[in-house]
Length: 306
Image (cartoon, rainbow, N blue to C red; front, top):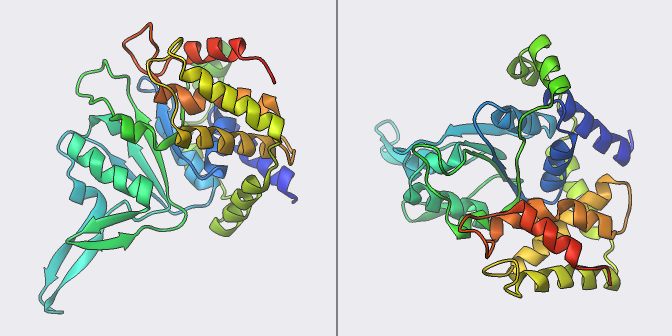
C-alpha cells in the first residue's frame, strides 16, 4: 500500500466510526501528521471521546485516558515515587502522561494548577517529578476534549495552553441521515475496540518527515504573512497572531497538502485549515469571547491572494 492509499485508508476508517463528519476527521489526521496537539470542543454526547479513541487506535499508538476533574492533581498525571521496602529505595511509578497518546477528557474541568503541569508536558515533551526531569515517549500527542465554557464546573484554559494546541475542531450535531445511521448501527464504542491499527510509530514518523518536506513557494509564504499581518491590524482581533502561530499555520497547511497528494502547499490548503488553526488563539474585537470562526472567515475573504 503506497503513501496516498494509506492516508486515504486512515481517513476512511475514522469516517466509519464518526459518520457525517468527514471534514473534521480529515482535520484530525492532518493535525497528527503535523505533530500537533488536538483540542476537540463541543457539547457532551456528540462523539468527542469516541473520535479521540478512534484516532489513537487507527494510528497504532500507545494510549491512555484521564478523566479531568476539579480534584485532579499534577501527580495524578505525571506519577509518583513510592518507597518500596524490598528495594530499600523510592521507585518512580509513571502516570498516564507516559503514553504516546494522552486523551485528556473534559480538560477544562481541572484546576489551573493541573493545567500548568500538562502545559509543560505538551510543550517540552517531559515532566519534572521530585526534582528530576523525565522524558515522555515519542511521539507524544495530547488529544483533549473540552465542554463549552458556560457549562457548570468548567475552567477557561489559559492562553498559553490554548496556543499549544495546533488545531481546535468542533463536531456539532449530526445531520438527519448520519443520526439515523447512528440510531440503527452498532454502538460506536464497541466499534472502536475492533478497529485495526493502520500505522505504527515508525511509519507515522516517516509521514511527519514528509510533511516537513512539502514545498511552500515564496508567493505562498507571502499569502501566509498577509493573513498573519491582517490579524494584527486591530480591525478583526484584539491581539494578532504570534510568530509561533504563523509557523503552526504553515505546518498544518503542509499536512493538508500531503493529504491531498501534493508535494507543494496551495492557497486552498491554507484556507482549509486556517480557522481550525488560529481561531482559538484570537479574541474578536466585537466580542468578549474567544475564537470566533466566523471572524476568521470574514478576514480570510478580505485578504486577497498575492
